[in-house]
Length: 144
Image (cartoon, rainbow, N blue to C red; front, side, top):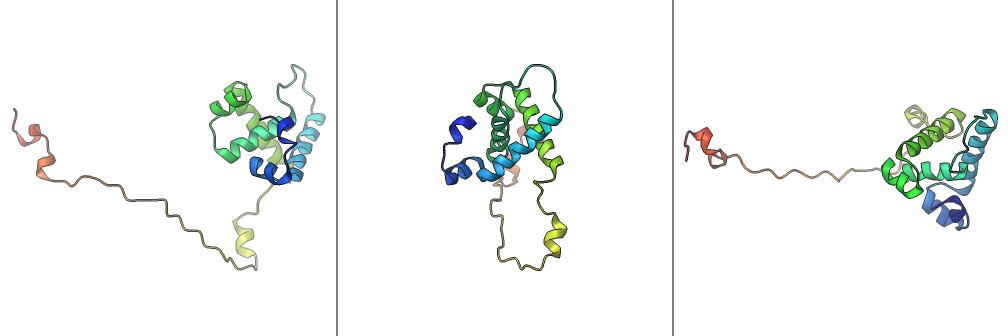
């Protein structure tokens, strides 16, 4: 789904689809445009617009899809999807406008945490009991 199709969505649906607000999305695109204007590269123009590149990256982050599946959905090569995602990630990180607070900021804050998250997804693995019957006849010395 390209940006042309997504931009007509309501803000709530846009956030559900992309995982970010429309203002955050437009700020990400503006950071990439500034980088692109500062460094013009000769050669073939990109197949995807900057908005589509950000959308592709957000799709990768939000859905945990493989590069192969993303590339098939956007009709590009797998290596191109990897390069686009890596470029967008590095550009956004270097801008410094999209950083999360680190562990120290959370520890030093005066707020009291009200939520406790418990991971209950682990379950014990059922394994067969070890008995003498489970051994192979070769180990017992009995060859049929």
